[in-house]
Image (cartoon, rainbow, N blue to C red; front, side, top):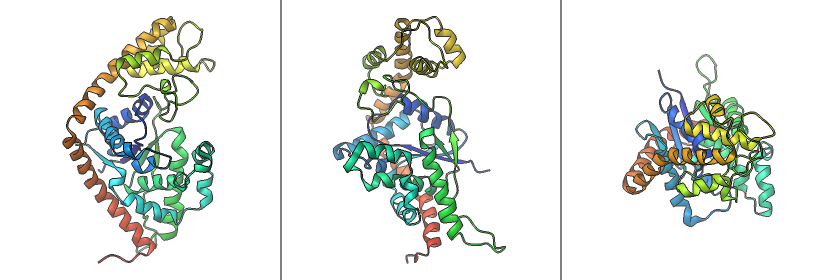
Length: 342
């Protein structure tokens, strides 16, 4: 029986941090055991906001190397770069032509980012949910791991596939039943560790775009910097750490980080730290964070020391991804009535 297919990816903007690892990539590693997994570095999405062209290629390689360093196995997963498969851009255009503009204008993330960018907001920022839909639909993904902030984008992909392509263009079989052109994906909500919060504000998600470097622990931060950031993390005057107190979001976040990084259950972590003051807890959290990241950082260094091997992995992924994407794109082209080449 064919395994359910999962697709996900991260933008190569800024450094990957603990939120990316604990909320997404560590779960991807587990999914490799039971699913057909596709993981891409979504570099086309990275240019929807102002970016540094001199850094894009290097950041793309770094992100791919971190995927592998965190445990993504190219023998079991397809690892590739989004822009290496031109079908992403072509399918995005085809989907653009059937997607109502008002569907995009109501996207919450567009509204939030557009306010920040003001007059510099690009058409790409408005349109990137359609590109995201193309990313997902190209690979016949059954499941897409999503956090709360991405659920609206997956719903858009589902609506485009179901209402704008399958319902309008699907051919009929001999019994008159429609033959779906695009697979309609389901969300895969990964709860544990899905929302790692900022070190400077326990009510805000840890983010690569936060201008305060002290708000996050990057996967490649050296031990002394990790300790420094945790030492400066926002706390409260209450003795002892606990989960679930809405008045203590920082305690909830930092205790959750300790549980995930130390491999403890929430109950065990709460018991470990119930009587601790912040002066005792922070060095403990720094120690487990440094030790948890040490093997990731060593594997990353080994991968970057072998650029040929890393490029081989991405080339292998490009071939597999292109093969699957081409079949989907051909179905959509045919359904929309395009003349076949040759």
